[in-house]
Length: 547
Image (cartoon, rainbow, N blue to C red):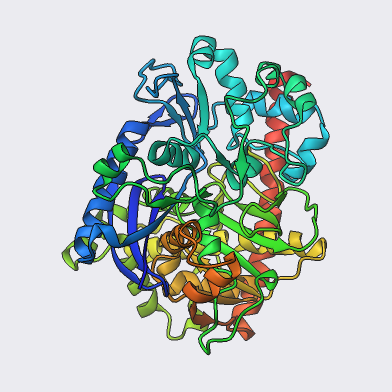
């Protein structure tokens, strides 16, 4: 029996899981990580803080697993697509107005570079066709351009710019090698041509990186799961409580690790499934939807196509919502009954959302009737813009149908309406893929928010598709562990690793009948409210401009 560690760094925590070579989770642990918010849509973190959280999580997971540290054969890592600035001596470099070098990470959800994003998109460069036609402020080139313009001293002082996942493999192995996943999905690296486009960087104002031969953002690029350097360094091994030399894999972005740990797994009967007919949907702080194809498919407003960014040799299209779990968190805080509901939930030993879901279950006689509770409340939960398929970072949330009710039942209805709104966003992505010939039959759902039966059934009913749930409770960690198994040479191919370690469990099918009619009607309202928000923003811009 071989054992592998998966390390996942999300927006709010670092986690580690110990898995065996059949994909069974032996033990896991997590630590919270600090996050700073500042005016101007600035969101920052610390690489030192994250590394400490990773070390503590790994040590606890291994100790809890009761396996000997020497029994670990491989390590895989995933993380959010956040930008890390590091000096020549490995020290952190400040990336924000605070000037604090410990705040050296621009978090994925940071939108400070919105002006740079608009200017990059105005170039219409061919590279943009590989990010759905328009680049997002969540990606790294707008952030780099902001740093070069707003903090030139920090830009010059940084010897290396990393995606967070690549920084973690650098921290564990000393290797500067980057992953095709991170560079292709977030740095405009053309993996199918194995190069950055020099002309693009010069045109957008980052010609200095081209002049340097791109040494600060990555010149050696390999597919996820490739072993890096000589494995775990002596220093990193001591900090993690492991033996030096353990194989460490080229990394994945966190959502893509969830995709690796979800799609293509064997079904409940043990039969192989068709990854090309599945869409991975990772529902956490944000939501990420990913579909793979044998040939490149260009879907307006959906990121990609990216070559070998998740599964080797296949093209990836990536959609999603910038705020998903975060949107629901914010939505419920707007209701006056939330403090009382939190108190009652705590008294019953439940989270607020588990408490509200129990309330919804009592209000609806059957699951098919659940949508009735939110029939007259419409929510477009785009508090942080529309990532896809509209690619509108300026879009904002719209809520219609509220009354003066202040009781907990009305809060439960609002919560359900928010879940419906997120599900309609997923439906939009499925329809955008279908227009380009990518037909999805099953959504494989993972992520913390995807653990809820109500979320699963609502997504099935709203999209009209079967929802499958991975057997493992931690598919993102499993995806990272699969990388570790690949790096250790346990499996010959990624497909072999997935077939051995990943399995699907429960399925949720659309309810149909009344549920379908109501969701179809609410979806049309959802689309019209999106359009109204777009018209409202245009009208206000015109008024402010005096036109």
